[in-house]
Amino acid sequence: QVQLVESGGGLVQAGGSLRLSCAASGHTISTYCMGWFRQAPGKERELVAVTSRSGVTRYYADSVKGRFTISRDNAKNTVYLQMNSLTPEDTAVYYCAASIRLGVRQNVADYDNWGQGTQVTVSS
Image (cartoon, rainbow, N blue to C red; front, side, top):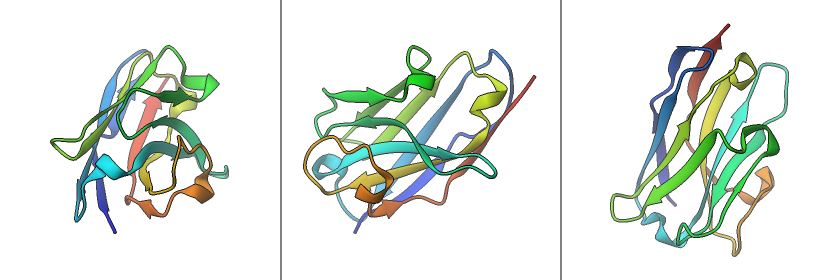
């Protein structure tokens, strides 16, 4: 089991940027597909971005393509989410998650390990 701790959230104005970090412990993330998800009040948790074990393959939700970048440093056991050109619609709690299942996993149900989340609030 891998433990995940997110950081880097906060309040930012529209058009601004934030960089989220997800520090893992208890197990190397090199054996996990890693993803970032978000959940806004009253909405279901949704995938934001996912990266394969090597970091070569990355998938993004349409709503964040061209603005967000997921990356991973397996040596540091850390995953990042660079968020640029933020809009109020990006306001949510952002979660880091790890999946031991093979392939690049895009479904919430495929992830067994979750962080506690970090709040991102974008003001207009």
